[in-house]
Amino acid sequence: MKVSKSLCFSAALLQLITVFATLVGCSPAMIPSLANHGVSGVWVREDDAYQGWVIEIQETSPDEFEAKSLWVPSVAREMYSFQIGEKKMRRLSKRKDGTYTLEGLQRFDDGSPSYSLSEATLATKNRMIIIDDNSQGQIGDRQVWRRVDAQEATMAYADYGHGKIAANIESFDQAAAAYKKAVLRLQKEKDMAQHRDLANELAWQLATSKNEKIHNPKLALSLLPALQTWYSHIDTAAAVHAANGDFEKARTLQEEAIAGINADDAEQVYLRNNGLNENNILLQLGLKFMNSGMKSQFIERLELYEKNQAYRD
Image 1 (cartoon, rainbow, N blue to C red):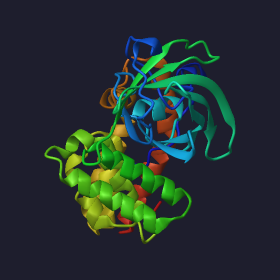
Image 2 (cartoon, helix red, strand yellow):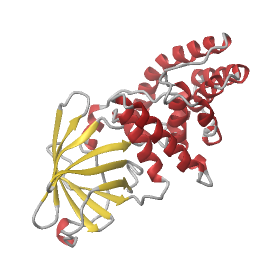
Image 3 (tube, rainbow, N blue to C red):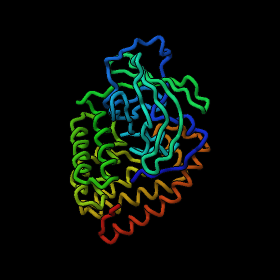
Image 4 (cartoon, rainbow, N blue to C red):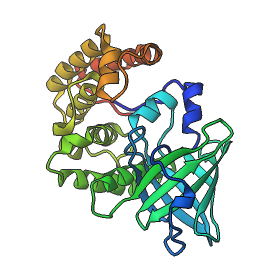
């Protein structure tokens, strides 16, 4: 299933006003200045609230940097409408003491700014502490980020983000290469299912893309062992089987996906499986609204499979 932009809950969005977010209990004064260590590279957030958020920081001019999201955890996407590649750091500048000032965000799609002010300090070469100080009242919000090693599995998320951003600007050769690189990284993992959300999104892109350079049903098929048994992943598995010409399997799975999204506890199942509070009434209502639109999409795909036609997005 394609991950769609969901309802934006404005009160909670204030807590995500920068692409970075919370942890650690020390102030900048307690952290040694390491002016010789740069911030360029891929970083992953390590605290509990938004663990797994992946960004890339690039130097755009001497001591000026830009950051973009390459992977956004489901909690941020589904609850607050943060998306891969949509937001970037408006300005990130290095100061003489070796710390960095982060000023605001800017959307990739329409360029609209969202202002905040944060301070980043390198605790070590590969660990960054960010202390948020913005106008929304989140004073002193502390965050921990770790620089990603080029060989670790987290780079698969970065590869996927590069692919998504490339596809958005119609650089399809680059997108296809990035997606394939992400899949190859996942295939090296002993337990690919621990990266189930990434596998789900990759499989969807490879199976349903209308662009022939990205469309790769056989590669998508290799990701199915990582998918789970709730309706959004079953919908993806059905699309993968249809793309590979197994319409009988696709029909069976799509019927399961429809039954799952129609179940009385569908919203609780989705929240639970994505690490969210399944008893949160506000989230349940938001998902009910989102699922009402998805149900018709599920049925339309089933009708395609009954005609032995694959779904292309």
